[in-house]
Length: 521
Image (cartoon, rainbow, N blue to C red):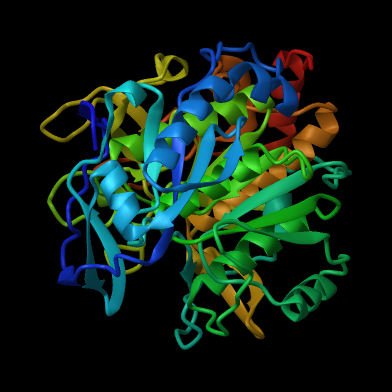
């Protein structure tokens, strides 16, 4: 390769702990990579309620066709094929052999076994021709290691229930949280991101029939070869998929649901998110994401690219609800430090933490931080080590990180809801009735609430965070002041366990109705 080359910033990867190298990949194997390009123009900070259309976004803030042409010329010179270009998503998909692709980006690839599966593992840093420096911001697809995990917890059916433990049909949880009456989510589309598993039509028929609710319209979209592929094991990702669809669909029964199935890789996850956000045919208004992993397991180029996608969503009026994790303040990392989960730690999403909820007849009797101990799970939450404190959290009392960095970072979560499997949700998965919890349940719970709010407001709520951190929104939350997630404790006001607390739907509708501006297209 002729010419000078530069490192692609933030692309460094290490071999994952526990991986055992098994040799080089097949040099003639065909692989696909997603190349993320810079914006055509900086994305302005729009006032609440002021959105742009997807067409206008692609034209004004998507990739520059001139940049795309430069990438095409580079790809052709390396013997690679351009398979797809999407200006709004700022993505170019390249296809070629392992030999040609690794040469083009100077990627170091090897095969390795991890958890009894063989993956293609990339280590080291990618490089680019100097003339593409600043044009290409991310390259994804070399590495096939699992990037995220589902944040659901299925209550073992063999364990007897303790006194006071109760499970709920999702609409009963919505009633406890005073979701707006009379709203059905009509005219709204809820997008759901899934990195595995699948759903059975028969399960949906059983679940919704028991609630006397018509089965909502559910559409599957394949991204990067992902597909609706139920395994038959309710403890697999099938549990996640069923939970997401059944919670969202039973609370917002007139909303359309679009499930974006993809592979559990950094490439697949990103492509599914950007596909959902920029999907003109389905025009989702809220997206639920119940997958993630500790910030320390992500490259900075990935976190930047995902976060920019969430910025896109804010400009388009799309709300992104993300589960905060089920492993407490450590996020499952056993290094003695506190960790938060990404993408929940992006400052451009609504991060959803978990509580343990007790109530009946539409009234809450007790609600505390979800923490069942080391073996049972606990809500994620804490302070980001990567994203600085956003302006909307300035007055919220977010502490600095308890780690040695004492970083003044983005606080997680923003909001919360019932996540304790001991007070979980009754769902149907793989032919079985199950009780499921985890912050995975809170993301679709909030997504359904957003759909109801959008219907009642007559416009998209969009990026909610600046509004819910305003003093006028306090009536929209039940403050959770008891419990901890390990390193952080609940208290009055915002905290790193439950954010502002669980929703008071009617109060939130009133607060948003008084502060939202009219959208423009």
